[in-house]
Figure: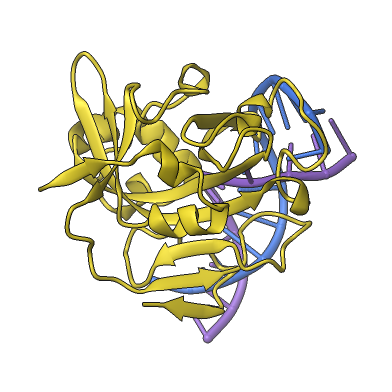
Length: 206
DNA sequence: GACAAGATTAGCT
DNA sequence: GCTAATCTTGTCT
C-alpha cells in the first residue's frame, strides 16, 4: 500500500480540518520487536480556549503542556485512574488544540495488539475505544510529546484516499460543550465506538 | 442483543 | 468530589 508521511504543515491546519483528514489515515508504532499499524476510523476535535471540554480551556498546566506546543506532536493523558487516551496536537504553538483518536481498525500486528490488551478474541472490541486503542498500541506516559513525523509513532496518509462518508455527531463522555458537533467517524465502519449515546448523525460529508 | 448501572482507578476539568 | 473509559453483571425485549 502506497503511503506518505503526514507533513508538519498538515497538523498546523485548523483542528476540525485535521480531525477529518486523519480519518482513513494509518497510525503506526515501531518497537524493537514488532510493528503495529491501524487505520483511524473515529476522531474528536478539542479546540483550545474556545471549547469548555478541552483540557487546555482554562490554563497551561504540567499535564496539558504538550497541547500548547506546535501541531504534530502527541498528547497522552491518564483518565479514570486506569486508562490512557492519545491525542494529536494541532495548530500553532500556544493554541492548545488537539484531536483525540477514538477508534482504529487494526491492519498489522493484530497478534501483538491482542497480547498488549490481554484480549483473546480478534473482534471489533480490540480497538473500538480511545483507551482500548492505547492498550492495544501499548501507549502510556512514555509516549507523551512525541514528534509524529520522526519518532516511533507516526501517521501516514494513503496515496489514493479511501472512499468513505464522514459522519458528524456530538462528542462522547463530556458535560460541557456536549452540544458541539466535533466527533467524526467513518460511516458504517465496524470499529467505530459502539455507544448508546451520541447516535444521532448531524450531517454527512462525502 | 440492547441497554443500564456499579466498581474500578489517581490526578486535577 | 469529579472525570474526554472500560469491564462485568443484571434486566428488558
